[in-house]
Amino acid sequence: HADYHLDDKAEPGIRMPVIDVNGDGLNDIIYGYGHGYGMGWLEQTRGKDGARGFKDHQVEDSLSQLHTSILGDVNQDGHLDLIIGKRLRGHSGADPSSFDPLGVFWYEIEDGQFKRHILSYNHLPWYPGVETINPPPNYAIGAGMNLVCADVTEDGKVDIVCGGKSGLYLFVNRGLPPTAPMVK
Image (cartoon, rainbow, N blue to C red; front, side):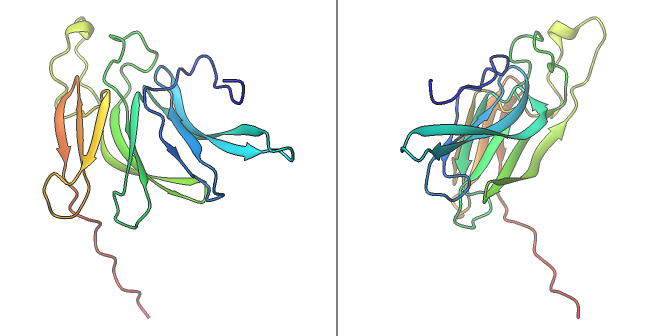
């Protein structure tokens, strides 16, 4: 689009959530690189003449193959959080990050800042000579092409359903750990 441009090598994932990331009243675009390393957001700006523009902000540069993402209130604070993860060998091992660890993460978004929380992060087993027919990933959970946020357990908390080449997984939201009172 004429208003913004992403790095051609990045090829953003299939879902790019739209949300006001920095609280300025303008919707911004969050993206993950589907075929390379990185995640960022495009801050919507307006010129003095009212012309729309976008400023690119990088959030991560070590995560890869972030094909899909979704918004949901994971921590029940009334604000939408980002859920995103790496796809297991999205292109049959052809991407530079194919054998990097798999992970599913959620990010608290506040005032243009992203705070990462790990739902799952694990290395794939490697069997020399059989890279293209690797066995099931032994609990290395990838995000696949679709994430769903819903109260599956009907307890009032958003759970996360994650399906892909590594299997179908349900992250049950048991709430945040209790915070210890301050010591005087």
